[in-house]
Length: 216
Image 1 (cartoon, rainbow, N blue to C red):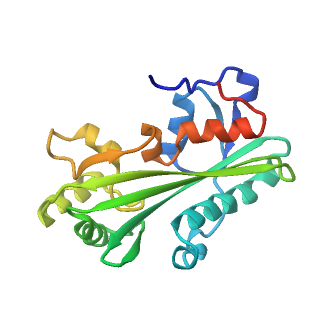
Image 2 (image 1 turned 45 degrees about the vertical axis):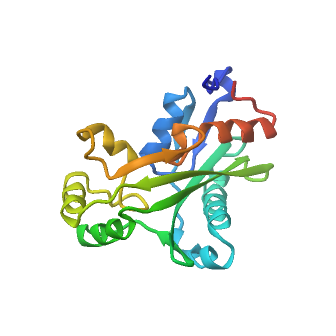
């Protein structure tokens, strides 16, 4: 049975989303939250060294925290939410940070490194009530298996969908516009489908509850 993720009280479901991601905003609005979007003005790459020194969960959490701390002062008294998703590919005995790519050539190169492999999407959420209020955080993970595909298939995908705004150079939701068997993704293991879009609703609900703000 799917959990009820619909907010019970509209007055308590107004959320300031510290993100410019239309995917995260859509997840929240589809779940019934009243969302105000305020993109943070931060350099996300500044924390990349944390990936190797502290690990992907810590990196994702600190990225989300950086966004919340930038946006919260502009919204006194509001509940401010930020999420970040870090893609992690295991290559031999090392972990590789999947990144956004600036052009088709880079995207195809990254996709070919992922062909026939398994990687993790590490999602972190930080929720803060006001610029000086309490904050809570949590992490959710999805496991994604990519089917073996050719460079020509990767190039066709990139030219069609231009996935330059997402880590890993692909979007799971693009499969909705593709023929059966055409998707580059073979399978996904995740607590809730919202997790693959970087905004895991069950985790968000648990964090709201920690702040005394129930989501259902």
